[in-house]
Image: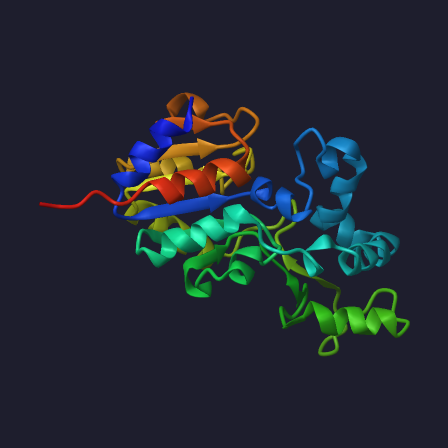
Length: 255
C-alpha cells in the first residue's frame, strides 16, 4: 500500500500511540535483529548473549557481554528523521505515547517527553542485579570493567549484574506492560514502526488495539504476521515515509 492510507488515518486520529522496533533506529547506525542485515540474521549465535539462562550460567559469556555493551552503537548514535517526526507529532498534541522495544534511548534524545516513552524492553543505560534487583548505571559498571573487573558483581549482595534490558526467558515488568496496554486502549490509532511483530507480548499490543476498536498502521520493510488485519501497511523506508506523512497531515478540524 502507499502512504496515502496512512496519511488519511493519521489525519483523523486525535490520539495516536506508536510502537517502535529496531527498524526505526537503523538510520542512526544501530542494526536491527531480523532484517536482511540484522544482527541475528548475520550471526544467529549472537542471540545467546540475550538469553537469560545462558547468561546466568556462563561466566565467559558474561565477560564478553560487558565488552559488547561497552562497544554498543547506542553510546554514539544520534536520532534520525523518523525520531524527529514523532517529536513533531507530539508537539502538535496528537501523540499520546511511544511504546518502544528499543533499548537505545533515541526517542528521549530526539526530544520526546520521557513521560510519554514506555521502554517495554528496558534500557542499555541501566544495570540491574539479578539477585537483589538494585539498579545502577551502565556507565558505572563499564568504569569497573575498564578498571579490570571483567565480570563486575553487585556491590550490595555480590549477585550477577545484567543490563536493565529484557532478555529471552525474562518476564517483562508487569507495571510497564500494564502501562503499555492502557496506552494502546486509550488511543484511536496504533502505528507500529520498524518492528517485525513476532516478539510477544509486545506484538500482542496489535490485538489489544484491534479489540479496542482502534485503527492499526504497520510501517515495516518486511511482512509481519499482522499485515492482513492492519488498516494500512507501509513498506517505504521509515526515515522517508514517516516524516513525510507527519509533515503533510494535520488532525481534522472539528466543526
